[in-house]
Length: 509
Image (cartoon, rainbow, N blue to C red; front, side, top):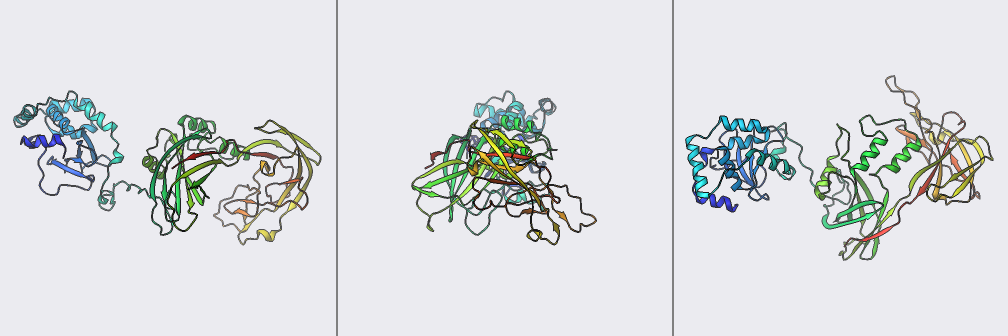
């Protein structure tokens, strides 16, 4: 019980004339927060006043007849200020309703409802016995307190979220639990949630600020959250450049545009974290990511899981964040004692679009410059061959897949490592088509791409990769997207694969 409230009780002052009647028995409602110590009742509409565990001597009003989310409001930073507000207003009615009034309406209410003689007597006792003076500007005091208060810190019972009892009830808050076989949206298996190990590590890498706030010790291994901070200005500039700052985002982007968007997206950075536990490496098992974007267009909202992560780790909501969760299995079946933990951040290769070219015949040469080193290379077309995949490899009872492609054999001078450069078709090819489409089925737009094996299908592009002929190590081969008719002249795109940032190691424990 707050000390200033104890001092008040010793004076034996009855606040009933001011709208605070002592309660007898159970007075809590569905919207009464957890940890409430009720001071008294207003005597109308179930309104009551209370302290809340964890908020010191701050005084709150609870109004069950209000519409969500306006059931609970703070009225005073402490009980002494609450009494000074009463000295200014003469009754709790003005205090309880101040949240929805402008200052003029508040002042008009006070003018129209001056204290009655019984109220004046109680107010005189408060002033003389406790040596208090009226609050100078009660409306400004209350509104400033309520504007700065974090209502997300209030906790309620299950009745508060019961939509059967209260159809307008808000959704229940998400419970923060981290599982080894899980992600931000749920988990599988029967394992218990991990025990949180606070780390509080901050560092700067890859031109970005990072936080590793915690790890979670689970039965199968360790789970770590990596939080990458992005200034809102960077996100806003990126969205405006690509027309992503509105709901009708652009469609029909070329392969080159898609690569540039991925490369320039400030919320996207592909990386591989390497953990070392007690001097032994821990390989990553699986991962997932979630983003928080403070610059979303009107009508769009961030995932509640992203907001939950920001709240749990107390991350700055004015900035953007990408939070990546990685799971690392224990090296042995038994969980080790964690004596030391270090982290190495390694960037995965980024894809940089380069030269677009359209060869007509073998022997053509296309010089190009490496985007990061500035070195000049030459691509020489050795041959152009039409190819067809066997239909039985793509046999499907419902869908017919394109099978025609163009193979371009080429050499590079000087040579580049195999994983440093790739060549792809600028077009996306033909989309698989239904053999006997239903009368109501929509007509699909044509596009498909080429890669390795058969990936995708009816809901996405079809892709194929073919291996190099034996013995042709210096000569490389690029395959176009797949088409239903033999591919004509194809425009190709060079894609460079580069790591832009050096690996760095940081101690975590």
